[in-house]
Length: 286
Length: 310
Image (tube, rainbow over the protein chains, first blue to last red):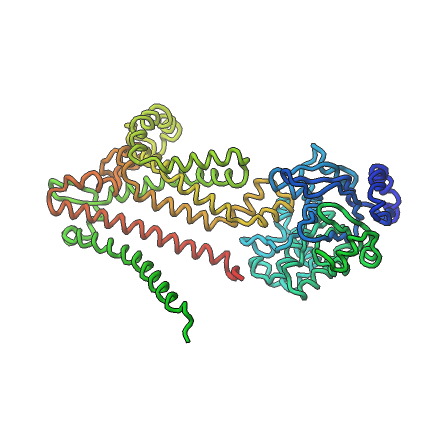
């Protein structure tokens, strides 16, 4: 762990150094470079047709930590998140400029297959979306089965392990054959998390994972996110600032497609460098 | 004081109820009229009407079995051909096709639905049948000639030709209904699969088709309903011979065709009544097929749904 922290950054930082310069004026100088990066986003712009959704964003997302992306509706935070595993490409007529380096490699390089990227970078969505025709067990294991895993003992073991990781095992262990959609909203969302972690991705992207849930279910999800971060790099989009404050290590503030500020969550919430960040945090707009 | 809208609400409620009941009443009325029109034949032949194969108006012998068989087999052939084609087309249009190719295909399919069936029948006689006779039929005979289904001499007009023309006619309806069903699959379902690293085919299989299977089944049943009652084009290519033959190259006859062909020639009361009874049988089969489908849909649904609806 420690040695990786020393070895990893130099491989990436030389590339991203010039751009770091650009954003350092906007106050992201304190992004801990001593941590290994999961992602290095370099001068990324994303277009939907003519519309520019993301404009010239540069940031590095630390490994095995929780990074929150906040900002008002329509600021491009979901797009930025989805660009990290190329999910935004499902919308026709998208175009990107710039780079997204994952473990040092550009995921938009022409030889890269997005299917492979998405197997390594899992995603949890705003609304829980278990497959309605599948049981709880089938939902969790569908990703492994897609990968051709047939070993029953292994599947069985991974089923329990994934459900435990999603803090759902105790609640469903006797009902594994029941349909996934027979669960409550919060349980369904945890089922989706179990489904995402079952394929052992390196990163979990979460797009407002608790926004459709009641406070108790939300608290459970937040606790879960915290636990997951010991094994996974987690990037979470939220419009709930308290949530970002509670459960993230780093926070990126996006406004109108631009990265306004990226720093440790403590700094963003107590001593932001940018006026706009402060205005948003204190609720003056958005 | 009663709110001002309550009278309007009442009128609205009773009016819509009356309309809904009128539809039900119409179905019963049609059934009753058909039964009344064929009462003589029903009394004369009883169950034998459904179980015998002789159709001889001169001797006043009427058995409907060859027509029932013809309707069932031609519809089955039509479904076997049209269902995979339609669903594959719908999948292509919703999941894969780029927008510039999608709209032209949709328009073409809609145009196919707009072709009058008599025109399709003419095309069947002058284009499809000669072609079938020269190329696909001999080929089928060569490959599958050892089975009873492709054994007999090839005339062209045949049960198989009838089934194919019905397939052409039900293709548009199954395709467009399937397309609507697939379009109604939430994008969130597709994204769930994509996020697991599924390929396009895997997304279609696990997220789209399995989600939509109930609806697709409904689309197929709608197509079956059309197939059973299809008249004009089939009459022109099926050969109109009341016989039951295993070979699909042999001519056949359907319930709808015999009514259309012989109604004007039905000079005796019993003949006319027999044709009415044919209509009653067709009516019954169509309703039965739909009821069966709904039953199947319910049992199919309950395995999925058991608590699905929140």
